[in-house]
Length: 311
Image 1 (cartoon, one colour):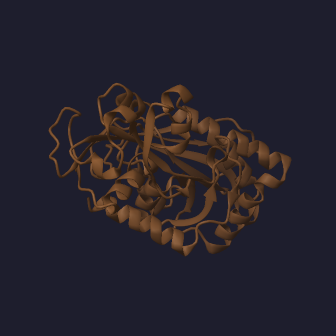
Image 2 (tube, helix red, strand yellow):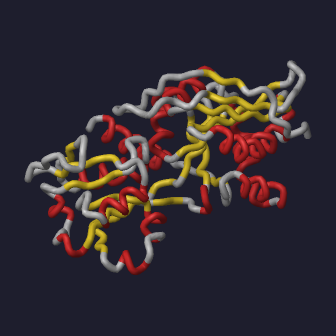
């Protein structure tokens, strides 16, 4: 196997444009590669992050592992390419600059719709195959049902988050509630609507509820269970959303079918060998990959995507 030295790092400036909102200044795109003859093709794994060095460290072993097992396709090197936002990653997938991309269902569907990328597997990120969102408040607020949120303010995480925004937004919308985005937690909320703001972090959501900055919040079930038991005793769960895949594996639409099938088999078999398990552990404690999604899963992810896009 080729040395795992980080090669030249290519920095490109991008202007971030996320779906329906303004983001912070973008992180430059970063590509790492192990030196290789020019005749050897590279397998490129992509990720969206503002911490490129950390992601490269976690992703490079997987890129090397996969590339080493695809020599029959002329592949001899693994690369990691980082983008500042999902829109840029979709461009990379569409142009063929990235072969594989991992993300939660909502940003994954943004990439699918903008690039034609294909969902092929599910990633058990952090050991979890699925996750869901919990909507909660404090018991002393007198909010006992979802309907009681009318005229109140709820905190979501980020507009691009599956568990922190998409799942609870659709859940409340399908419950018949009218949701209106607000600029600040102090904005007025009409009696027939539920105001929502973005805190940019699950921990902020929790603190904003505890400090009475908002009336309720939505966090993924892991974050909720991490709240100290004493604090949870003072809370009430108003609703729990459907469960969705923790992470989806996408490949670019132009990747040859034979390579796609080979990739799927290699990734599904990784947890069955000591070497594969070690690489998965480095890859953000991934437990395994499995054969997901079904057509029904994809259809539901698309529906979630459309409901948020049309908000």
